[in-house]
Image (cartoon, rainbow, N blue to C red; front, side, top):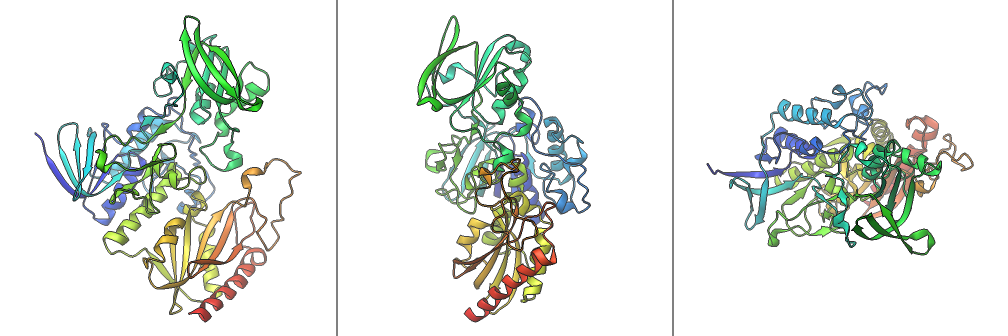
Length: 526
C-alpha cells in the first residue's frame, strides 16, 4: 500500500550525521522523519572502508574524567546530553573495526528512539511550494525543509580516456592473493589508495601509486583527509627500494590488450614527459562525490569543487534551493582541506550548529548564551575556562568560535560554537541582537603551520614561557575583536605542550590586559 507523509523536516540518510541531526530534532520536539536506503543505520559503513578498519581515532584511555575533554580524542561518538551511548565502550582499539561502528550507530538510533524508515531509497526530490520526495515503493514525502545527510555515494571517475577499463575501489577484490606476482597501478593518492596498496604489499610484485601534485601528510598539514601515518607503510617500501614507487603525475589514458593494461602517465617532475607503462591491474581509488541526480532538474542543487559537493551558504543551505540543507561529509566544501567538516569528529559539531541556526530562524529560539560580568577579569575567566575544556573548538579549529557579544548597552553575553563564516553574516543581519562589538575566540594553528616539519629540531620555535603567541605554529587560542563589522584587534595565547592555557604570567595576565583595552574601547564607542 502506498502512503503519503507530511513533516516539517525530512532527513535523508541515517549515517552518523543524519543520526546526529535526528537526535537534535527529537530532543527539540520537532516534526521530522528520517529515511534510510539500507536495512539499518550506517549503511555506508557496512561496505566502507573496504578493508574494514576505520582511521578515526578511538582513544579509550585519555587520563581525563571530563566527558567534554574526552571528546577531543574520541572521534566517533555522536553528541548527546546524556553522553550515551559512547563509541569508546564498543571497541578498545585505537583504529576500530567498521562493523563495531555499524553496531554503535544502530544502538544509538534505538536508544534515542529516532523516527527512521529503513529500506527507503529516495528516488526523486522536487520543490514547488515545499519539497516532495518519492521512494522506490511509490510513497510520497512532503516537507517544508529537507536535510540531506546521505554523504558522498557516487564514485568519482576521472575524465581521462579508458578510465572505465580500471577496477574501481568500491568493487575491486580485497583478497590480496588475487594480485600475486602482478604489477599493479593504483590511481589516486588519498587514504583509500594507500590502504589498498598496503593490503597488496605482501603479494603484488610491483605497486605504483599515481597522482598529481606533492603528497601531503596529515601529521604535517593537520588535515586528516591527507595521508595518515597508519596508511603510509607503502612509502617505506618505495624509499627503501622494495620495487614499489610513487608516480608524481597525471594519468593521461588507459588502453588494454592481451598483454594487460597500458597506461600513459605525464610526469610532473620532468616537464610532463609522457611514459607508457604496462600493468597487470589498474585500480581507481579517486574518491567519491555527492550524487545530485535524485533531484529534479529545476530543484537540483548547484555543485562546486569539480562537481563533487553541493554549494552551500554559511548556514549549510543550498545556494540556489532555499530550504535544502546539508550535514555530514559534503559540508567540507565550507572548509575544504583546512579543518574537519568532512569527518565525524568535525561534522557532529556542524550538525549541532545547523540545528541551532534552524531553531533560531524557524522556531524563534535564540542561540544559547550566558550573561558575563562586563569586566576584563570575568571575560578572561570565561575564555580561559572554555579553551581549556572545549572539544568543538579543538576539533573544528579555525571554523567554530565562541563569541563574547558586547551590546550597545554594555551587557556582555557568551555564546558557544558559532561557525565563523555564519557569524560574519548573522551579526550584521541582527540575528544575535543589537551588537556593537564582539570577541571571536577560536583555536588555530599558526601561520604556515603546514610548511613546518615538527620533527626538524633546527626549526626554531617560540618558548612556551613567552607572553605572546604570535609566532606559535601549534594549536593555540586566538581572540579577535570586531567592531562595526571590522577586525580591530587580535591576541594570541602562547602554545603549550599540554594544551593547558592557564598560566597566570603567560596566559591570563596578558589576556586580561588585552581585554581591558578592548572593553574600555567598546564602552567609549557605545
